[in-house]
Image 1: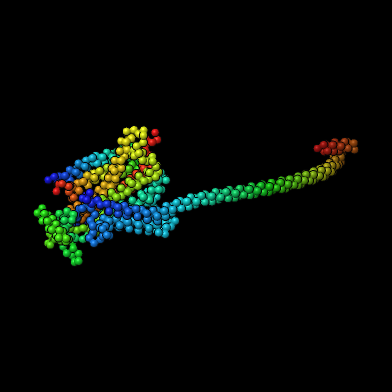
Image 2 (image 1 turned 90 degrees about the horizontal axis):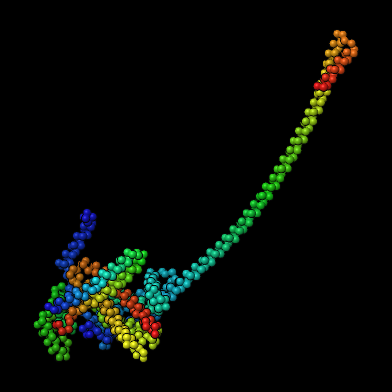
Length: 343
Length: 77
Length: 163
């Protein structure tokens, strides 16, 4: 206790407390609008394909991964001069060794590329939720418009800071009557063939330009579908017709009813794989993002700090789990069905 | 009323199982580490992996809760 | 599904995006890294073998030199032994000669002493005889006949020679 009473620690503690008080009393941040789908950015579209903020994040993650990877292998030396090359080789060796432990040398060599691509891509996609500016820089639109398009009911008042507009923490909620009125007005305007613009917006909502890519279900389900289908392709390639037997697909004569049941279970487990892979990744990152939002909403300074550390860990862990499960699925697909050896 | 209650129930009930599961997992891992500390590192890695898997079940519940809270269940609004 | 934001276009675009990323990395990055690691492993193995060979060679060279050194040392030892044997022999010779010479000197000295002794004895004999004659003269002068006188001298002389 006496240690805490020395001037330096005391000053730090008082500073922290002051920061907490200031953040609670004066610096309040709005709770960002929490939406599941990636939000399309107006004016950014390729033909019919509207580019969403999660898609932009995906592209950023791609660019970061590619840039780091190409920088690492650009003019490689036998005795590494760049730290990046060193780190890259280290990572490659560690994970190749890990995969060798799981599936043997040949399989590790074949699929370490998929593993590392998934790991790097998901790692940067996940960690993007931690980068300042992402989720907080975007365009502002009236809450009425957002209600018509996305069903958002809570907006915020805005403040002009020079050329910039910022949301304040003053909440504006649309009451049930207002919602009805807005809906009616929007329908009338659209029936006349025009775009709906509220005359006097009560509040505004912010749609970020960039949102962590793995908070979009399309990405996680897409990747899960991809790797599960890929594992079946690998299974067919390596085992041929034997692989189909595991699902009791061609009902061969002499097959017992239990085999059909096992095949059915295998079918179901394939869907369970897709669901669990995609929702594990999505859920962790989405929930982590909401957690960070809510913590910053409660106390804007200090309180979110430990959660950033937690999310750093979770982001890595989920990327790793997704990649290692992919490898395990690939590896399992190359085993013939347990019953085959006994027949 | 049910709009407020349902997310709470979703995450509250959904967290029971994973909570018990993680407890059992860590118990087993710690006992194993106590019995043979020379493989403690390996056990710890696998324990963390297991925790992540158990935790993701709670995360599914959390996702459902968040969906109910922010997006709303069809037919409730 | 729409509430979850699921949309087939986006889903496919993400899959294509991932495939592109995988293709680029697989084509340009991973082979380079794995090649580099393999090359380095090979080179390290080669280096180790070379070092092993060099060490073995050095060991052989050392053994050879040691053997040579050993041979030279033995030779030197032999030479020293020979020299010391010769020296011993010379010493023996010198000692023998010295002993012989000493013996000769001693013998000659003894002979000389004997001759001296004989000479002195003869001298002494003569002198004693003279003294005895002198003494006898004195006695005779007091009154002894020729015969007795002679007898006495004879006795005396035999006694002296006996001594």
